[in-house]
Every structure is written in structure tokens, then in C-alpha cells.
Image (cartoon, rainbow, N blue to C red):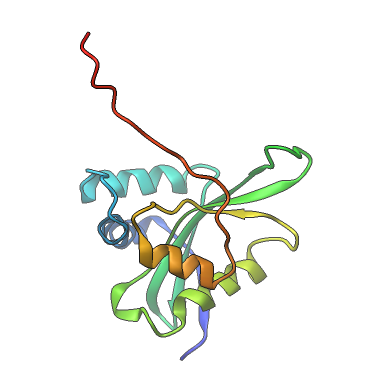
Length: 152
């Protein structure tokens, strides 16, 4: 496997990011109804804000991406944690160690030693849960939802 590098995303990367985000939505079983144009616009908003978007590259080829931001720890506001909102490896690059290598690279190059890294994984996304456990993440909380069927 060729070594991965990180590259900050640019506006010219938005169409590719939107396509990868659409595949992430499909792969994790999310009910997110956004189309490619909406996903591209959302990515543009993140690029212009305090979110960071890194492309995971093998040479000039993009194998995946990460979207994250730094925020104060809920219980220890003097500490900073990382919220890793999206992490995706393109389907044709999976099962080759790129996912694990990308997480190691983020930990070494982007996140500070001792920082807590937080992710969300949909409950029905068994491959996602398995991957995150493999790279050292442990379940912390469960978010539950219901739809109010009461009549107005």
C-alpha cells in the first residue's frame, strides 16, 4: 500500500466531496434526503467555517475524506476535543488498510495528543461499528428517537 497523505480540501474539490458524501449516506443507511447539489453547498459552507475538510490521498488520487472541528470539551471547557463528523473511504479502496491508515494519519498530523475524538455511528451501520471498534473507538452513549403520532 502506498503511503497516504492529507491535503486540505479546496473549492475545486466540492463536486468530488459531494459524491463521496452521497456514497457515505448510502453506505451508512442514513435517511438524509439531500441531493448532490445540496451536499456540495453544505460542504462549501463547512469550507468557509470552522470545520476542517481533509482529503486522504494516495499520490494524486483521492481515496477518502474527513470532516472535523475542534470544540471545547462539554465537561472540561478548558480542554479541546475533536468532533469527527464524517469519515469516508471510497468503495474501491476499502479492505486495503486505507481506513485505518487515514485515522492514524489524522491522529498524528491533525489531532493533538490527549484530545478526545468523538464520532457518531448510526445504530444499524454494522460495518461502520466494526471499523470504528477496530481503530479503538468504544460506545459511549445512545441517542434514541421517536416520531410523535399524536393528533393535533
